[in-house]
Amino acid sequence: MWRSDTSEQYRVYEFTDEFVVDVLTWACNTPNADFTEKINTENMSDKLIKMVSDKRFKRFREEMISLSNCKDIQDVKQLFLLFKEKYKEIIQGQVKLPFSLDEKIIEQIKKPFDYYYKQLIDNESFWGIYNPEVKFVSKKKVREVISKNRVCPYCDQVQIESSTKTNMDHYLPVSVFPYLGVHWRNFVISCGICNGLSQKNSQYYLPILHPHYDEIENKLKFSFDFANETATVQVDDTENTIKSHNYLKLFDFNQLYKGTWEELNDEYDMIELSILKMYHKDKGNIEIVKCNEIIDESINFRKEEHRKSAGTRTYTKMKYDYCSTYDDRSEIISWLMNEQRTR
Ligand SMILES: [Zn+2]
Image 1 (cartoon, rainbow, N blue to C red):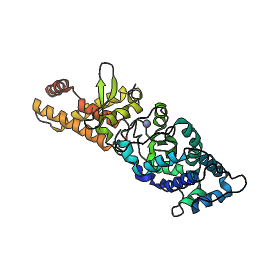
Image 2: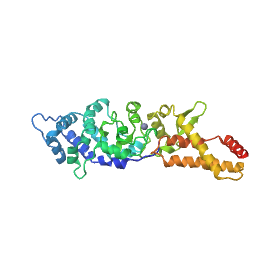
Image 3: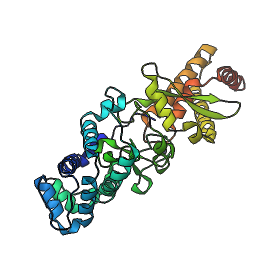
Image 4: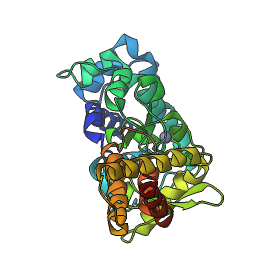
């Protein structure tokens, strides 16, 4: 729930852009290809020829055929090229998609791209052909490096420090944008729960906030219902509220934050502890004005703690907002004055 830009680390997969362009270009120029007799390498780049000639890539050749038999493959290529150049602008609503793919095409191209993501980008021989200058890194290793000491950027609730607890989320879902299956800008590290949210596949809205580009901490805000002990998330954005609202529709934070009030009880105790510590530092007589200063200072101290641990510790955004709404001033002041009298 804080801006957390890990896109540079995902650049290790940038080389796949060339691969996807090669494959789509070939498919556009070679409709209804058939490799049963002999592989015709016309319209193929040198690297692609290496791929199809490699005996180990039987599945790859099959998926090539299915792409070449997709009659609207030109549309797929056009959209992929647009995302390759303008991914960020599309997310932010500065560039609009000229059209979207209909379900039939999505169904047709899903399998090849699924194969690229699940098998090919984790295949050392593929790297050897398309990315020969760079030593192969496994997907597991990439996840491990990126997730180190991190909390899920979507929910701010789950520590994802090990690769087993980490998912590589396709931010724009492959159920709608299958051709972004291996596109590096579309990867966001997340927890398994957020990656698996069902609404992410059934509905998608653009423009939308993105944890790599937007200071989400300034666009969303928690509010607290003390009577019912519930925390809810609202849009707190004066510039482009539509992006923030779309983000809220995607992540059902109010559901995700049900039953987390205990965290705030802990925070309440921490604020009091901090006030008490500061109070004891000032050993002399304490006036009400001084009490207010101590409270302010303590709250700011707690807020700063949460800001510093943003993205590395859980629930920091909720606690940060909680500190901002801390309102037990009169009670605390009488408690401090009483503490003073009983000394
Ligand atoms: Zn999450």
